[in-house]
Amino acid sequence: MGKLNRTWLGLLPLLAFVSAFEILPVLMLVKSSLSGPDGLLLGNFARTLTPSIATAFANSLQLSLATALGGTLLGTIIAYAIATSSNATVRLSLTALANVTANFGGAPLAFAFVITLGSTGFITILLGYAGIDLYPGFRIYSIGGLGIAYLYFQLPLAILLVIPALKGLRREWREAAECLGASGLQYWTGIGLPILAPAMLASFFLLFANAFGAYATAWTLTGSDVNIIPVQIAALIRGEVKLDPALADALAVLSLLVMGSCLVAYQHFMRRMRHAA
Image (cartoon, rainbow, N blue to C red; front, side, top):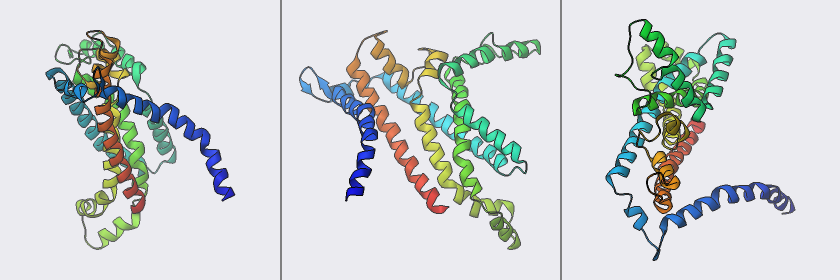
């Protein structure tokens, strides 16, 4: 009993930190989203049913879905190339690069894309010399350009999530399948992909939540030109058009529900992946 008490005593600083910076802010956010002149009510959530906010949700969901799906599929292919490489230096170098780029986001990433793919960016000018005009057909300041920027940090994150599952694929399984007459396609559809599926689904849901809540990259790159939920929340808090913190809190709660659902799904598939291993 004494040992158990000492264990909980050691966790007190962590519990205090989590309560102060995670639990209490969320509780205050929920309370604020339900508060109004007449006490607790759902009026703030009813006010989210406007065409502008509906468009913001649609854009955020579309952007998150596209980058999560693209990042997961491309990340799995690249992760397979890394995991099956016979050169240990290449494997370690590319994994380290994925670690670095997965954490490179926000305003610096947006600025990097502006100076490379902006209207006067380095690559844009080089392509112009070659007779290829990106603009006005392509704009990095649009939702499509924002998707490309998101893929920059979504793709390496997917690589890091899928590589451990790829390492769990034993060479003996493929050799046994080939000995039994299975083709490469039959091996992947019957053995490889079912084993990788939990890791890929976990990657998809985490990438979806990651994209849905991203703000700094979107605001720095596109400003208010792209209507997505994080930009809507920031505008309501700063009062650029209309100061309405209660409505911003309601949107934040709805965003938390979306991202929380994704994280629950992520944890579920991660547990399945660990059990499969």
